[in-house]
Length: 96
Image (cartoon, rainbow, N blue to C red; front, side, top):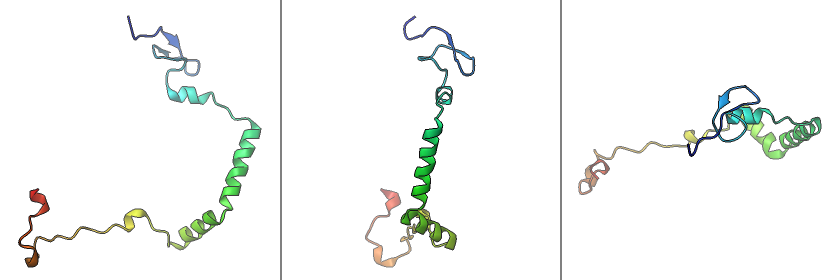
């Protein structure tokens, strides 16, 4: 039968599957990735350096002070212009 792979067993969870590849899902495929201690140390060091950058420090201070605003706080509502007498000659957008 074309398009069907032979049945095999996932080495992580043991489920039988007919999918392409060795693993039954992406979660099982990712579970076999193990970082070495050297890699973990490099990632931690990079995170520490990033957290000490001026932008991150300023962001933290603004967040703590409550002056940091979310994008939706900048949004404005669209006014209802149907009751404006000076716009009688224009069609309403809901009629388009």
